[in-house]
Length: 133
Image 1 (cartoon, rainbow, N blue to C red):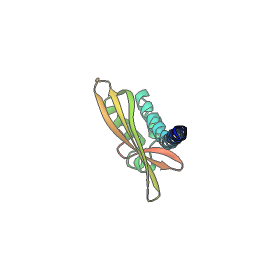
Image 2: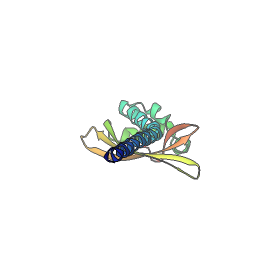
Image 3: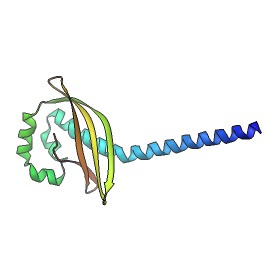
Image 4: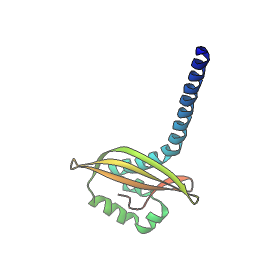
């Protein structure tokens, strides 16, 4: 009897572990592309590549900011020296997939700014949307 209980316990724990692994892989697979897009955008800003960063904006945001106005706006902001992703959330509402990526941006002043980047999926790619920086 004790052996049967032990086998059932091992199977349950093993099933929970395998299920947890696949849940983790599913969430990571859904959030990694959005995280990578936001990190690519911030990496371009860190490098001073405003053209590269501008190319990663969604069409709605590019419509609000001309390329030169975006570059001037970035130049007026404190320079980003480093970043760390603190969280990613992906959701689909009414068929529209969007994400928020929360980052700690280390600025040249030494101050760390908590910033949330909004992203939308546009033509199969994640794009930074809204107030970019």
